[in-house]
Figure 1 (spheres, rainbow over the protein chains, first blue to last red):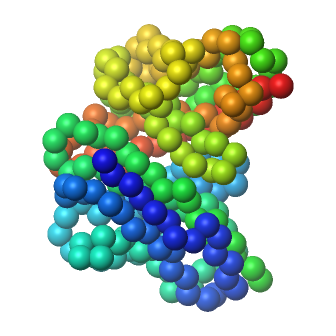
Figure 2 (cartoon, rainbow over the protein chains, first blue to last red):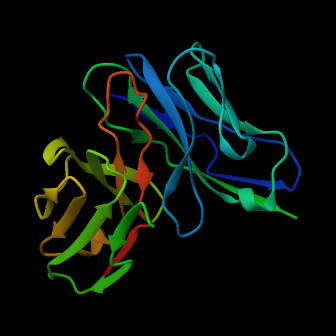
Length: 115
Length: 117
């Protein structure tokens, strides 16, 4: 069974500061990894995903994430955040290959960007 | 045009009632999902249908019954509502999942906030 741990439930930062949201996963097989964002009172939206190839993945809104297989991590980063980045961020994992298509989500990290 | 829509947006009801939430997608996707997000924002898959066939059925009370009349619709019916059913329910859709993961982006609806009194 897979699991996802988002180590920080809340991350407050000031505008234009860099941010890193941490995600670790556990799985007995190879995985695909995703980051979704949920703005207040909205559904989730895909930020980026890692399937294979380069371990550094770039997504929308200036976010990027790095897959580290040895540390089973997929941390999300942005070099300079804006007020509009305030949202809940979810890391998710699914088995690669096979027929288990279920996405398992972490518990989310609330990013609050202050002026 | 809204890609994934849900109705109603808010639903307040008494314990013991039966209610339905409707979901429609106009993206031409083959696969649809229902998720439950609890008060701590934890998001958990409940069901998934691929081309009207149930492919994911998590451990959910049998008071919850999904119904997919066609590929574009996936409704959720809940019988005998309990206090613990209060949550935000999200519908999502995607292209049919494959082993390659290339088409795994799920598009989420705006959610239905269910409050059971």
